Every structure is written in structure tokens, then in C-alpha cells.
Picture 1 (cartoon, rainbow, N blue to C red):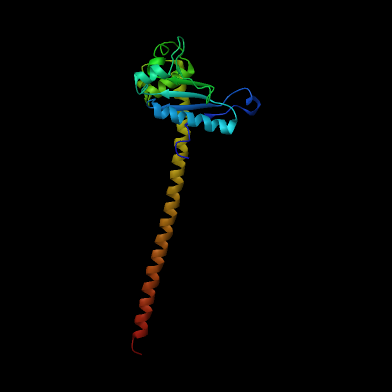
Picture 2 (cartoon, rainbow, N blue to C red):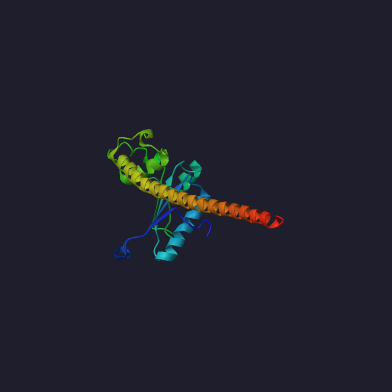
Amino acid sequence: PWRRRTDSLYLPLPQFGCDLPSVIVKDQKKVDRAFITRAIRYCLNAFENTKSFPILMVISINRFSSKKLRDTSFTLAEGDPFYTHPCQSWATKVWVYTPDSISSFTDISPMDPIVAIAYVFMMQQQIIIGMDRYNDPTIQQIYKVSLSIFSVEADVAKQSIEQMQVFCDAVQSQFKKGEHYSISTSASTKARSRRDSWPM
């Protein structure tokens, strides 16, 4: 249903299902009260399916909607690259990554994988050379994996287009044959009609 689906839901393997919570990952342009309300719904929907409260991880590209919301509803503990939020009744944990929460962690090389993923989302650069930290090993690995995934998708899309083109060419060829047959039949019919109308 509308507004009940999240971006990604990661479930533990069956043998670990009792010990590990599911993880909801959501990228969000800006964290505001409306988003928090939706996030609670996402978590409760996950609870209905898994019977355990999930971890909610949010990557916020443009921080919070206001400083007041951030300061009254979220906490940034020293040593953490994310804000936390009270969530005992609907989630196991809530982690919100923002540009300011990860700023002191992006200078560490190699970058922590989760911090690196958040950094890539926030920078929104299609090519690695556009990143300030393009030489970081973790950033490079993320782009390599992304390239391999999108290359496969591009190949599949190209193959689909080629198959569609073959199909369209076949249909067009068949149509031309039908059109040619129709014209030939019409011409033959007219010729017979003229012959039949000649005086004997």
C-alpha cells in the first residue's frame, strides 16, 4: 500500500532469525516529522512480518528539517557517526546518518563501510572522480561493485532492446509481405476483370 513500503529490508538468515533483527535502510532527502511518522509505520509493518522490531538505518542527504527537531528528538553520542532516536516501542535501534554526523569519520582511511556508503549517497556523484575522497579504498570498492551491478543491468537492457528490435523487424517484414500480397492480388483481380469484360 501507498507509503507502507521502504527502500530496502534486510532479513537475517533463518538460522539466525531468533538472534538478529531485520534491518530497514532508508535514504531520505530531509528528516522531518512526516518522515518519522512513515518510518514508524515501516518498522511496525516489518514487525508484523518478522515478529521482532527492526533496526532502522536512515541516510539523510540534507540533514534534518530544523535544528529544533534534531536537538529535541535525536542524540549524537561522542564516537558515533549517527544520531539515535528513542524507539523502544517500534524499533530495536534507530541510526540516522547525516553530513555533519559523519564529517569527522570521512578522514579515516580506509573509511568504515557504512560511513562510506552514507558518504556516497550524500555526495550524489555518478563518477568516482567527482568525490573528494575518491582515493579511499572503501569508496573505490563501492564504485567497483556498483559498476559491475549496473554493467550487468545495462547488458540485460541492451539484450532486451535487441530482442525487441528483432521482433519489430520480423513484424514489419511480415506486414510488408502481406501488403505486397494484397497489392499483387488486387492487381491480378483487376486484370482478370478487364479480360472478362473484353467483347468475345
